[in-house]
Image (cartoon, rainbow, N blue to C red):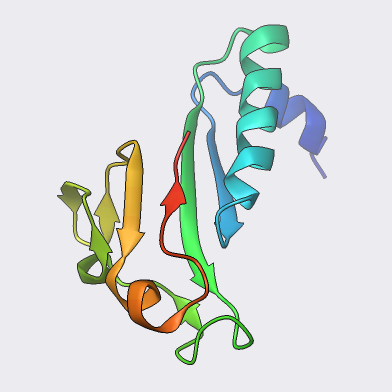
Length: 101
């Protein structure tokens, strides 16, 4: 079996994804920054917006058509902008918008 750390540290363009309700991408950003600083990588950072049942009556991942203020890059994938809002969250969730870094 290959050494996972060796494989990850050798990656030149790792894709680092945070999955959750917004704060998880901050952890992904920290991991990506580690790879950039210590291994010379050029990481891509992404996030998957996901709401929980206690927060939103429609739990699960957010569809691209629910995200306001982002440009569609490919089916199911949009680019981040300084402020994103989920239309469903605006009317059903406790938070009006989350801010991307």
